[in-house]
Image (cartoon, rainbow, N blue to C red; front, side, top):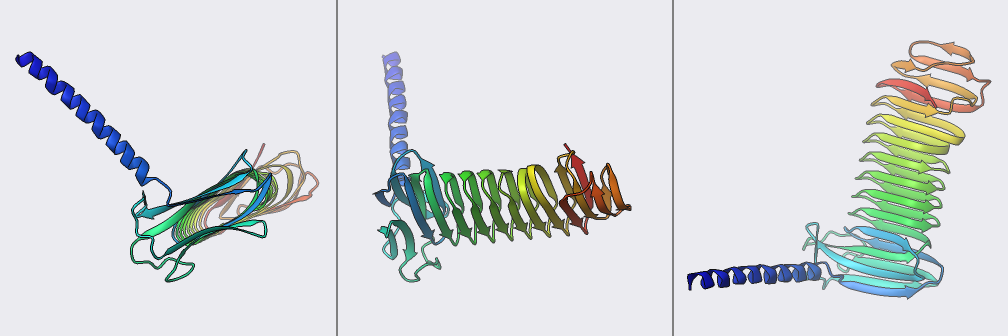
Length: 311
């Protein structure tokens, strides 16, 4: 009798655990459900504008010919489905062939100065050939797998772009920037974070006043500035020019060995091997031509060393 009772209790415990797990899963799914959804048929090419106040934006390219818009409510950084959205206006419209997506606080159109700590974030799936402009005042922006010009602006979050065929323009005053595999030019700027860029083939402008710059497999024309960290730059061909400067760290630039360069290097210490060089060279300054000259390479720092390496 006791044995049967133990078996019964075990079954009840297992069953109760299973039911509890199902309930928790259902709750999680409900909590992550979108508060707004729209779908547009766009063909093989689209243009979208996405803006929100205080929330994140994700735009991802795919094989579909549709633009699928989903909005999610966030409270204290977590997705919620029971938020009070009475004074929010969420819209998605086709205006002259451009999909315009907005989340606005009705009491203060455009920017969040809200009282209930709710923000609206968007996830947008688009055709591969899509031109994007994304804006938010308080969240991150991620754009990926797209062909066309991409623009992203936030005053309070990080920025990320990857697998883009086209030029990108990204600005933030409060976060880091990460870009990778950009077949086009990149203009990326932040005043409050680090910048990492990898595989940018059309030239790069990178600026930050509060972090380091790590730039690898970059070709074309490069201009990089920071006042609060070091710079590491690896250039590949074709190479047009290099102009990098920092006042708060060291600079390391790696360039192809067999090209001609016009060098201007300045730092507390300059470290490089000068081959076929004509010009002047001291401990902290180098100016002159290598391999007959040609490509301008300027690297300067007032807070560390400058190193030129070759590959």
